[in-house]
Length: 401
Image 1 (tube, helix red, strand yellow):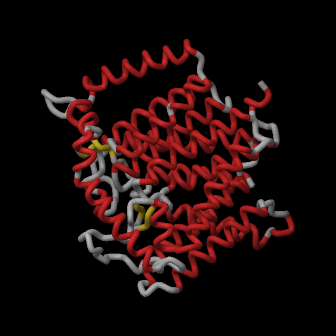
Image 2 (cartoon, one colour; image 1 turned 45 degrees about the vertical axis):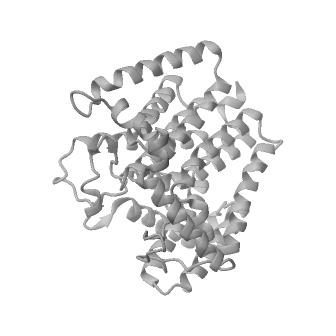
Image 3 (cartoon, one colour; image 1 turned 90 degrees about the vertical axis):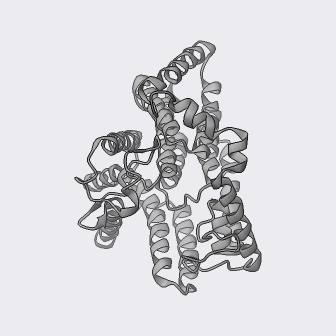
């Protein structure tokens, strides 16, 4: 089992390097598929050793896989549909493998640390390395390093980078709240995660971060909150010294504040494009309410608004567009699941509060982006389920203090 854990950690370490390719193969996706293949070979040849897969996880995996395959088989663009289907089903299988392999709090905390430090490493490399040295896909060439101070790293674009940074913020917060590592290390990860969220300049993700910071209001006393506020102000005030757009304007005045001005929010190109795409998507949902549109069938299709609508920049509209009324059941099931966690009597209130704010914080960017194939969404579910399991088993250090 140890070798599979090492393989799992190796895959986790590649996730922040999603855009990196080796011999023409995407690093993160290839290692993930190899892990899935190795795990199933283990199950096939060592079934007598026993396989402890949660029954609920198995039924959810089976139901969603059948739903995805049904939509794929209906598609008139098989190649595009298969790419999406493999990514979605691969994420589901990885979730099952993660929950099967991560059985102790030590393994869980180590998996979180691997993700966090790999993300920091990818950020450092992306800012400093010469793009001629590494092999990357064409669309990443312009995004690697800082582009108008919107960090993209190896994650295709600044929004994906910011969403991963938000997960890293929660990595530190989870470690701190559950006392899985030292407070200094946990808070350092939290702080760096928050700073990199801001550097991404992704408005949706920054809103998710702002909601996530509410958690600390509940768990910190007045003294700690005051120290944190002072330190936060210090970081904000000194950031322009190190991160200047030019000699006259700094990151705060030129980018961050400007991006949140009401007139910019209401009249920006991204806002206009999203509202137009949402209108096209809603119309398509209305035309295909039962089964939805087959996966891959909208690749390259231009909607009435003049924008491509295969990706509606909203996770919930995406599910409704491609899976119809069954997609609606999936969405309702997700929110009912969150409600059941919050009302669960066998979870203490601190765990319920952590999971509620964590899930909502990560949910906010999904209103403006489609993140089903983004790795932080996958890891969010892995973390939530693992925390619930450890809490119910009373194996969390925070439960014994």
